[in-house]
Amino acid sequence: MKSLIAMLLLTIAMTGSSKAMDSKEAEELEGLSPETRLEQRCDLEAMERIHHDPVKLVPDELVAYAFKDPKVTGDKIQSTGAAFRSKGEWYHLSYTCTTSPDHMTILTFQYAIGQMVPHDEWSQHFLVP
Image (cartoon, rainbow, N blue to C red; front, side, top):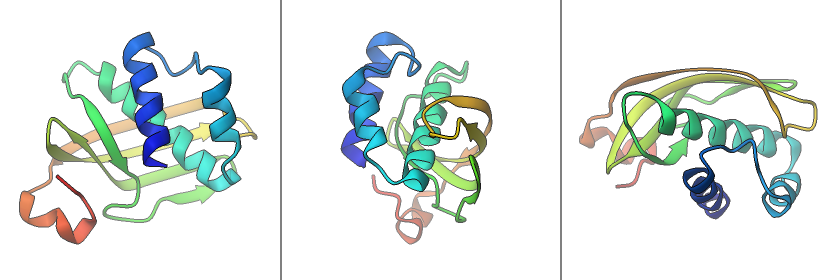
């Protein structure tokens, strides 16, 4: 999964948008189980939006379940205990994401960036430097 996110983030950085996924990237997402695809597609959307957010963070990793397991209902995922890494630091994140039934198209997305995660909490939440 990590390599897929890294590859898609490189594409996002180069094109400025994940909406223009090429067929290979779409094929890789389609190869995932539906629930995993939902989470990965929404994680990618979160990282893209954070990348373009005025706070000037550069996300390179996201853990949707760092502080609390996400809630999945149909085509919607609500992650209130996520975290993302930017420039070597981890930040709290919450997001709500709804996709099309195939989990390939984002229909609605809302997010909030939280406080920086103290370094002494990283290991207990599976956050790596």
